[in-house]
Length: 112
Image 1 (cartoon, one colour):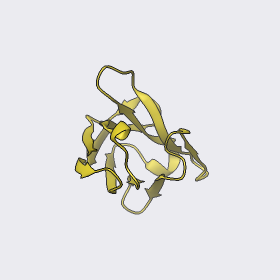
Image 2: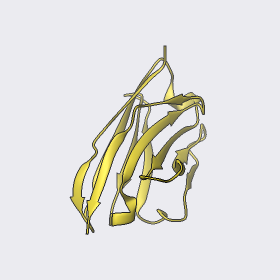
Image 3: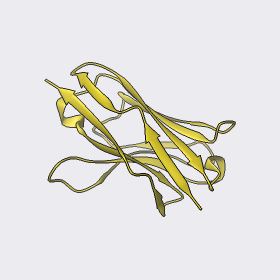
Image 4: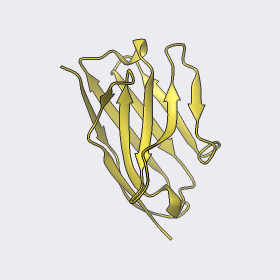
């Protein structure tokens, strides 16, 4: 059974930073494409960042230069470091594993 558990969300002022974590079980992160997605109120879920099996990364244009996705193979975890946060980054952030598996999400709220 695959489980993805996000943590690290919270309330932060604009310009601040947060680090999201995704603890994976039942799936090996180093052998799967892992990603972070987000869904803001009234909007569709959108891609934030992915890390591939080779370690290659991909980012949404809106977060390039501010967010960094990383993978901890030893702990079977994926992280999302978010810097210079903006109010428009406010959303529920979801961890995705191997395309098919989703966590329950963690809320990030950025105040202006």
